[in-house]
Length: 149
Image 1 (cartoon, rainbow, N blue to C red):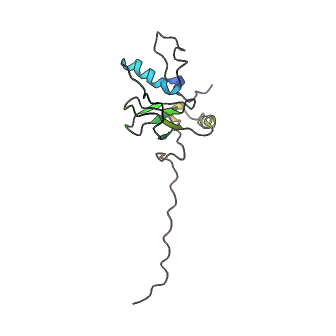
Image 2 (cartoon, rainbow, N blue to C red):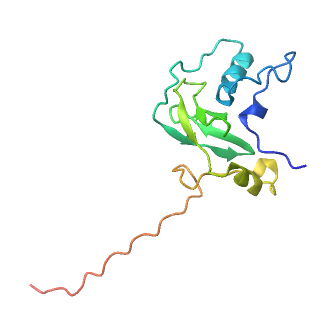
Image 3 (spheres, one colour):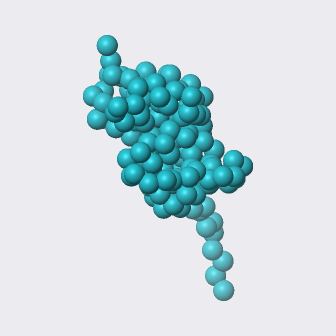
């Protein structure tokens, strides 16, 4: 059985001795906050305002994990298409909408032939995509005949 692409629901799990399903009722976008709090041993609170910041980020696959990068501080977190939003645990930048591909399953399936550490995918529309096609330069128009003065 191939190794599935990792999503927030399978990455952020409760620590022992809590049961594996202890966070089953937590939305995927909030799992990182719960996990971070348990690992850091201090209270962290997601942005109280559930309104979006107006920003949107492109989710991408990095070494077999769906992630989103914070445009404010550069941190990243594992995310999920089941809950397409993101707020940064490092700088507390508010809720942003995540853009996933229209067919998440097809993108994940297209990577299954690769080793998990080599599974990387960027949205073609993401300005940060290092593999984005470079537009052809527009040729300079011919100057035409010159008049002598």
